[in-house]
Amino acid sequence: MKVNINILYVLFLTYILSTVSLHAQQKNVEKLITVKEKKELIKLLCNRLDTVYLYPENVNKIRKYLNKKNNDGDYNSYKTAMDFAFQLDKDLQYVTNDKHMGLVYDPQKAAEMTQQPNENYYTLEVVENLKQKNFEFRELEILDGNLGYMDLREFCPVKYAGETAIAAMNFLSNCNAIIIDLRNNGGGDDNMVQFLLSYFLDGDVQFATSYNRFTNSYYTSQTVSYVPGKKLYNMPLYILTSKSTFSGAEAFSYYLKIMKRATLIGENTGGGENPVEIQVVNRDYIAYIPAVKIINSISKTNVRWETIGVKPDIETASEDALYIAKVKALEDLSEKNASKKEFYSWIIDGLKAKQNPFAIDKITLQSYAGNYGERKLIYENDNLFYQRQGTKKAKLTALDNETFIIEGIDYLRLKIIKEKGNVIALIRLYNDGILKQDLKEN
Image (cartoon, rainbow, N blue to C red; front, side):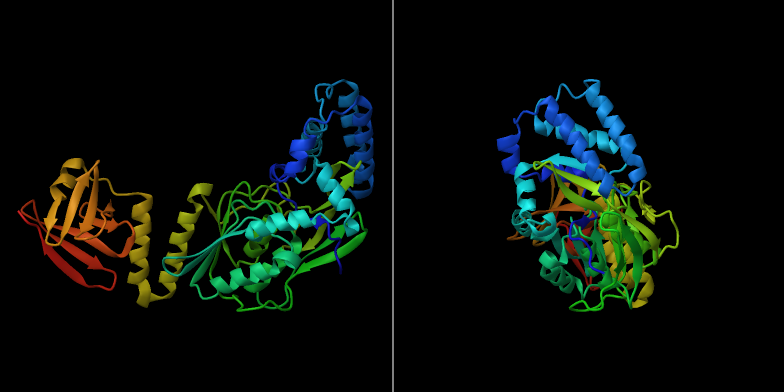
């Protein structure tokens, strides 16, 4: 069933406000608003809520709350249209307890939307801005152990971002496992959510049936029958989450978790489930109004992630989530492939050392410094450095009291050899098992 193009798993309002057009910020920020205009805006906004909002029974409460604040003079201090809209936005979220609800003042964007069929949110300017950000596919990288990493900041519509999404998935297709970073993803378009899920799920999967009050229609979220490139049904998958993971990013995470297809790592997500209709109000304002409710989902429960968020499988601080995911992925791969256990252990040990370096006292570090044939260890500023003749020095990080990893050289480690408490040699440990010794010069 065709879905109204303005239905979005909308981004956090802080993100929306940050993307209000620069033109609007500069030219209209000081536009004054009269008492009459404030009253008219509240009236038109509530009338729009009457026809769009998912919970019409609550609109009268919203209307009374906003009108009372206006009549009591609570809005008198807001002299500009932008300041007033910002306060209305805060009050809407307060009275509804709905993080999807919002209002922004942006005359330019509103005018562009009115020129689009169905007041399409994705105007030429919006699409161009997203293009300059690679449609929010911010980073793709192959990490040690052939782990694929993708930092995705928004689910942009397939219509615009489809080719970029396909390229990203092809780039990751030969990895041993994939980490998808949604810690800074506030949502986006449902059809991209479905499109990317289709790479990781086998067969026809129906995630949910939803009802749109504004259009009085139903639609189904499900995998698409064809996606270009290699299917990744058996690819180990890890999703990074944070408190800022919201809306469509929560849907993506939730469905993969429910189907036991991915391991979620990080923080409990933001808790915004109901997609919105984006509407122009009173020419200069744009309202984000929750209009769609899931009425039947694959989880077969009425409790999903609205207000409560999605709970990760492994809870940890957002800033530690990527490290935890790397170690978890490598440990899982090691368990499944005994012949590569040493290979994965080498990488895991290095990750752990970088995250939590072993502490060695200064006197011991100083005793390690010296010349070892063509190589030398240098003690400098409470750190130990390695340098081969003719190359730049590289910082060492301790794995234990005598073993070190070398910054920028993943295939080689160093081990100090002692005899009767005195340093006598340096062993070079290579990741292919080769050992080479360099005697310390007196």
